[in-house]
Each structure stands twice: as structure tokens, then as C-alpha cells.
Length: 366
Image (cartoon, rainbow, N blue to C red; front, side, top):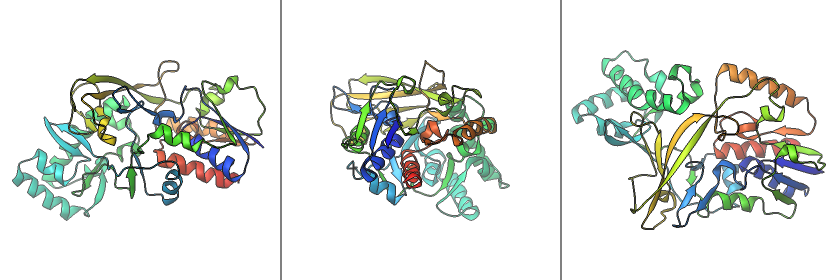
């Protein structure tokens, strides 16, 4: 059985490794990019700083099987991600939590609100912002409006290019109010950054005698025979956009090298209400890279345009879901062709979920 995998990101690398290793079959992996690891690709620059080319990637998961799988190919540090936001000129952690409360409000006011929050909600509960707005208490109504405007409204508009009312609930649920003192961005059991980087991790995954990797190679230009296809590219592109184009948001990162040891206090600082970029990344925080200079990346969100930028985030709404279902129906009619990954499934996947999806697909075809 000759297997062709289109895409050398985590989805493609996972399915390729499982087929090569457990089925002892030949796999060719192709990618249009000049590097492996997809949008998780990183590299060390001339300062020795590990740069995440396509924005910060933090590995986190509660899935034991995913952690066991990726740990074969990488050693991770114990980095736990925190996000700082500048709210009314004050640097504080988000999601908005009980610690944030005391950072942005006078102590007496914060204490009163904390007591009411603990009366109305379970401790350690994450409440989606739109649900949190449904309050009768005057103090909690004020707090809900404050969080909505200062953290959610303007940031969401910048990130998605539409008003929050036009954003799917799956997106708004990712911006909760956290009734807790836990100021970590993720609460997963396993968290960290691979010491050698994501590029090296994927390289190790693809390092098998049965796997051949070809970069700078388009699927449309691949002329060799194959018996089974695993496609992690855009599903609408595969079918030549016969039903129309699936919309995506893209991101533009503007890197700056600065002659100072550190630019900001944290790896990521969000600017919900200021500037036209959404956040600033400072990569040396992740692996504690030590040097006299630093590199930051200002992140600007924009709509995806073919030939201009990269697809990042599928835009979840009813119209796009219906369009994807048309392509999915076409896909199901194909024999020995499987779609996976963020672009193939038109679904927002964190890295662990992309791996989990590939592992599940392998069990199906095994």
C-alpha cells in the first residue's frame, strides 16, 4: 500500500508515523512550504532565540495518549502559559479572574464583587462572557459590562473583523470569566514547550525508514501513483472550490529585533483596547533564551486572501458550516481518501486535538 500524506504539520506527521511504524507501509509526505511542522514551525535566529514563525504555540493537553505519543519525539519543559492584558493602563492576567479583580478595582469594591461572584458561581468555574452578562445584581451587571468592553469587545472585533454578535458561540466561550485565583491560561494536566522546538519534534516524528518527505511540492503537481491519500490541506481547494471558498482569518506577524534583554514582562501581552494589533509576543520567555537582545512580534489579524497570506482560523458560523458540509459530502463519496487537520476538517484544532484526530483516524483505517 502506497500512502500519500499532504501536509507535514502535526496532523500529517502523526498519521504518517503511525502508518510507517505500525503497518510497515511506505509513506510519502509532501508540503507546499519549504519547511515541516506547518504553522507550528520554529527556528533559532542569529541571537539564539527560538522564534515561533507563525505566532506563539504552547502545547497543552489532558489526553494521556496524546502526551505519551508526542513525548516519544520531544522533551518538554514545565512552562505554564499566562497571558497579560493591558486594561486601563494596568497590566493584569486574563482570562479575567479573581486576581484580575483586585488589580483593576479598588480593594473594597473588588472584595464586594468577589463575595457576590462566589455566591452566584462555583469556585473554579469558567463562565462564558455572554452567559456572564445575564446577571440581575447591579454590581455583577457592572462587572459583566466592564469585562465585555475592556477585554472582549474590541479584541474580538480586531481578531475576527466583525462585531461580537456575529461571532459563533464556540469562539466566545474561549473568553470566559474564571471564578478562580488560577491565573494560568490553560488548566490542562500536561503543558510545556519542547526544548528542541516544534520543528525538531516533527522532524523526529517523520524520521522513519518508511517515510519520505518532499517540501516545496504542491499536491496538484504530484504525478506519482498512490493507493491511499491523507489530505490535511484545504478541503475546498481539493475540490477546486466547486461550491465556493471557505472563509478564514489570517494573521500577520511583524517581527522587531530590539537592543535590550527584554521588552515586556511576559511572553504574550494583549492590547484589547489599544493599537491596531491584538498582542505582542516575546519568544525568549518560552525557553528562557538568554542573550543581550530580544525579538518581539506584533500580531495583526486580517482576512485570508489566496496568494497573499496563510489560512489560520476557520470562521465558525452557520453559513460556513453548511458550505463545509457540502464539501464533506463530496469527500465521503471518495474511496481511500481521508481529510484531517484544521484545513481538512475546517475546524479550529489546538495541537493536541490535531494529533488526537490523526490517532483516531489511524485506528479507523488500521
